[in-house]
Image 1 (cartoon, helix red, strand yellow):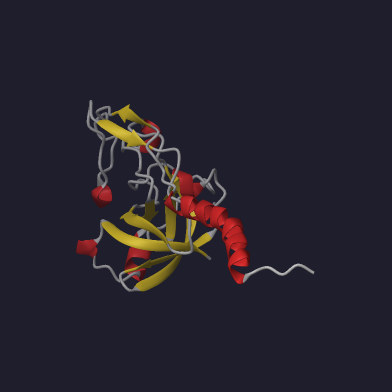
Image 2 (cartoon, one colour):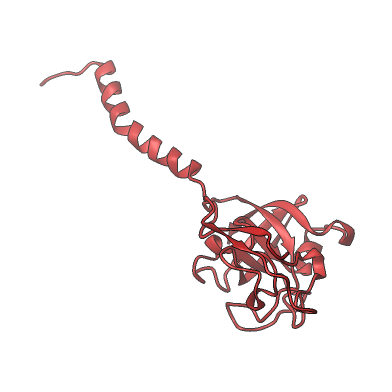
Length: 191
């Protein structure tokens, strides 16, 4: 029986393991690059609801679009924004997942296009970690990162690719005072 030195065995293991480590590292550093730009149009009078600090498109301004979002991990970094999912709120029409409006007192969210994943996360719960607290919320809508500045999107720009757009109930559960609500760096995870 042939014997191998410990250094030979170590070299062999490194040859086997190194490509796998590289592919894991590549996956973690893989980014989501912009897919294009759209030119803003001025909303018709009364057609863009600026509630909750929502931005209305500006004529001629270029807005970045995305087909993807950053990879999802056990604690995915994101920016929490505020939205009203109620009828007449700044969220526009009914939610994409269930074609319903939702009360501001219900913990619901919209995810950027890549995370929404062609409705694959519809009506699933996610856990949001921020401000030293956590809250569970249901995914009911897409925060569209591909399109915007039209009637279907309440004449608001496309979402960035890292947004969790949340109802007031989520912000309240995280203990964020009303005057500080707008944007908050958070982590989210699937439950």
